[in-house]
Amino acid sequence: MLIDSHCHLDRIDLAPYQNDFACFMQEAANSQLEHLLCISIDLEAYPAMRDLVAPYPQISLTVGVHPNSRDGHDPSVEELIALAQDAKVIGIGETGLDYFRSEGDLAWQHQRFRHHITAAKALQKPLIIHTREAKLDTLRILKEEDAGEVGGIIHCFTEDWEFAKAALDLNFYISFSGIVTFNSAKDIQEVAKKVPAERFLIETDSPYLAPTPFRGRPNYPTYVRYVAEKLAELRGTTLNKIAESSTENFYKLFKSVRS
View: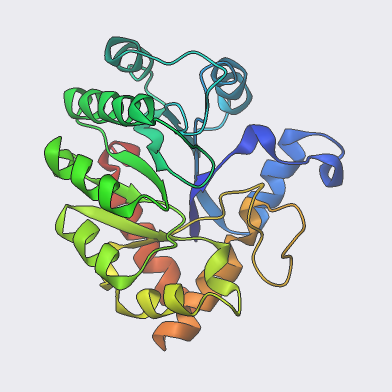
C-alpha cells in the first residue's frame, strides 16, 4: 500500500473520472493508495476542500497559507490554531519561504512562516515546509523558532545533500515528488540515495509536477507509484520495500492517523 503525503485534491482535474470525486477515490483504492494528505494553500479555498474530503477517512488535511499567496487572508496564530482543532487536520502548512516567485521586501513572508511554526508548536502537529531558492533563510527560521520540537516534512525536495542533512538534523523528513523521476534531476536523485530509510516520504504534489512518463500533463495521486518505483531503482531495492518504509514513516510522523 502507498501513501501520497502531499496532494491538492480540490485542484485535480476530474474530467477523466466523469467529474465525480467518488469515482476518482475508487480508482485511488484500486491503485493501492492507503492514505492521502490533502494540503491547504489558502484559507479561501479551505472550507470547500474540507467539505470535499469530509466523507473519506483515508484523507487527512493540513491548514495553512502558501508562502506565495498574497491576495487572500493572512491568518493569525490564533486562527490557525482554531482551524486545526478539526480532527481531520494533522499538520500545519504548507508554509515556508519562496524567493523564486516572490520579490522585494519579504518580511511578510518571514512573519507568516513564523506564525505557522508557532501554531504548529502550540498544537504539537508537524509542519509541511515549502522552500524554493531560500534554503539558508528557511533553515535559519526553523532553528530560531525551534521548529524541530514538532518536526515535519520538507516537501517536494529540490535541494542538495547539505540542505537535506541540515533538515534531517532538525527533525524533518524529506519527501520526494515526481521531480525525482526527471532525467535532469541528478542532484535530487543523489540525495534520494542517501536519505536514511526511516526518514523519507513520497508524494505527488498533484495536480502539479507529474512524474515521467506523464511530465507536462496533469498529475494525480495515483501516480505516486512512479515516484516509489524511481526511489526503488535509485536505492537498489524493491517497490514493496519503498512502499513499506514510506508508509511506516508517514504513520510515525503523523501518529494521530493510526490512533
